[in-house]
Image (cartoon, rainbow, N blue to C red; front, side, top):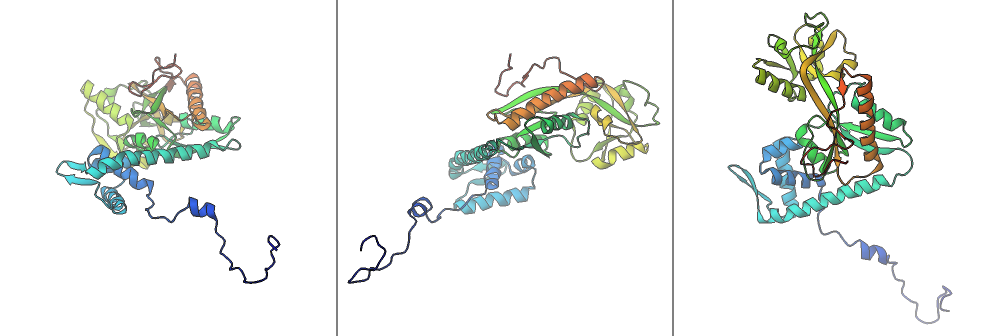
Length: 354
C-alpha cells in the first residue's frame, strides 16, 4: 500500500539513490581555482607601486618570493597581469580589470573576519596590534593592554611588529586591527589619534661624564660613538639626524644589533638615543639623560569603518594610558598641546571631533 513502506504486488520499484537537493543546488562541482588572499595582496602591491622591489619592501618580503606569488596568481588565472619594464612593472589589460576585483575580494575577507569577531559577545575579544619593538614594561602599550585585560570586557591582544611602510597595507587588508606608531600612515579609510609626546633620551653608561647633565645638548653627541640598531632607521635616529644636520653637529652612527645596544653602552663602548620610556625597562649599568629639544609623538591608527568593541576599547585604553603616564611621569611624557579628544592627522579623511 502506498505510504506503508511495504512492497506492492507486481513489478518491484527500482530503488533510487537519495539526493540532497540542497547540496546539489548550492555546492556545484568546483571549476574555478581557489585564490589565496596573499597572492592578491602581492599583485595589488606591485600594481600600486609599479615596481617589484618597492612592493616587496612594503610587504616585508624578498623580491623573488613576491615574483613567485604574482606568477602563481597569473597561472591560476591563466593570463598575464603584469609586464616588467625598464622602470618597473605595468599592468596588462587583464591586470587592470583584476585590480578592482582583487580589492573587493580582500575587502570581503576583512568584513568576514570582523563579523566573526563581533559575534563573540561573551568572553574575551581578540585584537591584533602593531607597535614599535621593543616596548618597555612601563610604556604606553603595556599600560593600554593592562587596562583592556582588567576592564569589564576583557580583550586579548596579539602584538606584531611592522615597519612604517607596512602599516597602512596591514590595516587595509585586516592583518592588524590597530597600530601604535611614531610615524602614522596617511591613507583613505584610516583614522589617527595623537596620544602623547615622549621625550627622547641619551642612553649612557652609568659612569659617563655627561650622566649627571640634564638635559644633554645635542652638540655633546658630536664627539661620541653613537650606536644605532642596524635593522632600520628608528624614529629616534631620524629625528636625531635631522636635528644634527640643522645645528651643524656631525654625528656618525655605528650600526649595531638591536639586542646589543644597551650592553655595549653599559660597557662604555658608545652611547645611543632611545625613547624616554626605556628607563623603565630595567637595563643594568646604564642611565638615561633627556636630549635637549628632542621628542617623538605616539599615535594610534585604526580603520575608519571599524567600530568593533575591541578596537574602540583599545583606542580608549590608549587615551587613558597616555593621560595616566603624562600625569605620573611628566619628565618623560606629556599630552600634546594641540591634541583634542580626537586629534587627527591632516589627510586622514577625518576632521577633529569638537
